[in-house]
Length: 179
View 1 (cartoon, one colour):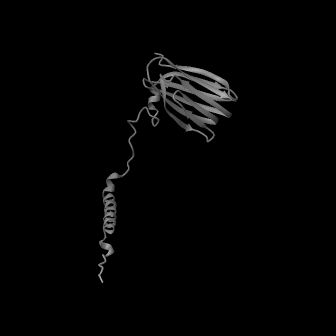
View 2 (cartoon, one colour):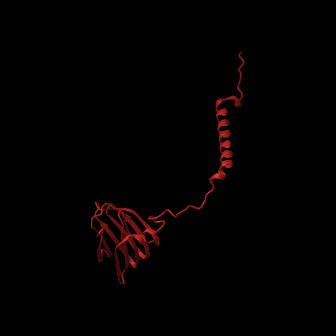
View 3 (cartoon, rainbow, N blue to C red):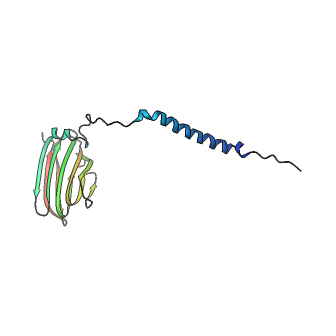
């Protein structure tokens, strides 16, 4: 009869690997805890953040393209359009008791959508963006900031249309890069 030598389970390679893993994890947590004091979160300096949605300081320095106002019982809208060399910014305020659709369209070779920011929006609003349009389905009082990338310095139009029950109730356009 042969005698079998049984290894202790602590000498198996799987146990040794698990032991090294756990020791590394604990050592890593200890090192992170000791060094973590240098990673304290400080207030971010935003003085250099100009021309972004965080800071509208540069918006006041942009050239004014136009300020469109539409006032009707079906819908009220103000659209303030300003532009610079590479950016067109639209400040849009909409108010409508019933559902309306606003479509902002433009030539794709002249502009592209960078961002549509909801400033104050209710949950009944939906926004759809494409390569050459922004569509806003609006109900209630809402505010938006739309940013477009100005691809060239040629005079170009941005068209605004407001629909109610699939009928146009307002239509206008703004020309940017006039100078």
